[in-house]
Amino acid sequence: MLAAYACDPAATRGRRFAEQAAPTRTDFQRDRDRIVHSTAFRRLVYKTQVFLNHEGDLFRTRLTHSLEVAQLARSMARTLQLNEDLVEAIALAHDLGHTPFGHAGQDELNDCMRQRQRGGFEHNLQSLRVVDELEERYPQYNGLNLCFETREGILKHCSPADARRLEAVEPGGVGQRFLVRLQPSLEAQLCNLADEIAYNAHDIDDGVRSGLITLSQLEGVDLFQRFRESAEAEHPSLTSPKSSRRLMYETIRRMLSAQVYDVIAATQSAIEQAHIASYDDVRRAGPLVQFGRDMQQASSALKSFLFRHLYRHPQVMQTTQQAKIMVKELFEAYLAAPNEMQAGFALRANAGECQGPSDAADAVRARVVSDYLAGMTDRFAAREHARLTGKQLLL
Image (cartoon, rainbow, N blue to C red; front, side, top):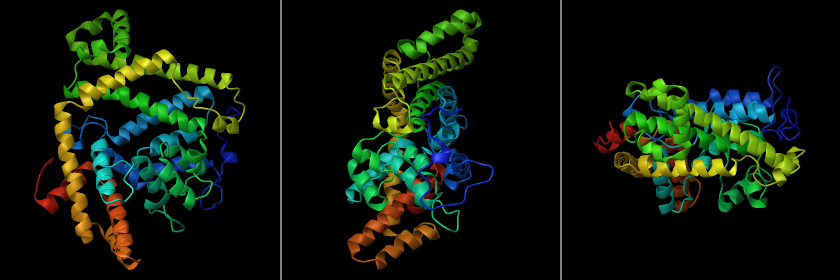
């Protein structure tokens, strides 16, 4: 049973293009299914989480990360009596706009666009662009034509300038809340925090598997060490060196459970204290889905540890720099020769030249190149870079 403040699919604010309701599925279930069957979702299997796709078969990708976020978010949503289908749809779609090579690719593509004064690049906006415009599956419209609530949940960050641009195109749409300072649904807030829980925990696993961080280094991280100690106390066999992987898995499992229970308790308390009784109350309140104070501090300390010892590890930084070079050189190559892109993108890029002054045409071309690059998988981007430049940086 849904809480009174949960998103009710029967009360959805609808789709940009009206459609007849499905006979056996709610609108949010339909959104989830469209996302799962999309081309952009399949591409996530070959997009970087932390380690590049060619570095190992068992490291997490954007796809496995999205599935883990969805699992955590659904578990919490059920207890909080929120809409699990909407939570799952948002979680599965939240990274659809991510570039190849993870945040390195995003940062470099943003720099390329900003240097040409083309508004930059941001993966949350690109995820919305994917589901609104870039997917080509239906004869009636571009995109997936998702419900307002799903689209708003996907767009978890947005600058005032970008929000104004969105509002100009879609008055009262998904950009409005950033201008009038309203909160998104509890389902959207929950996915945002589930994302943080998932990548903090699972980046430990990938970091240890890679050899870039060790269990002994993690002894200084309270959120990890306290659950390691409890696991060893309950299962003394885990102290054996041959059980180190079992120890790590059990520690991460306990750590995840504790964070999930903490979010549920802290969020229930926040809802009660704010006297939330409806969906409209949620939008007018401050952020409600949250950690308790102690868990927030522990989570922040873990995040800082991972930043220093994993994300800024020299080996990661070396591959990151190579990835940035590839994105920059691909952007410049396609901008200079748009016919090197696949036919549909080349057609869009060249069509801009017929739409007015050269500056407007350049803007169209840059955005098309950005769309094309952002949609690439790691390995396709590496092959394209080798084809166009003759260099083999990450193959």
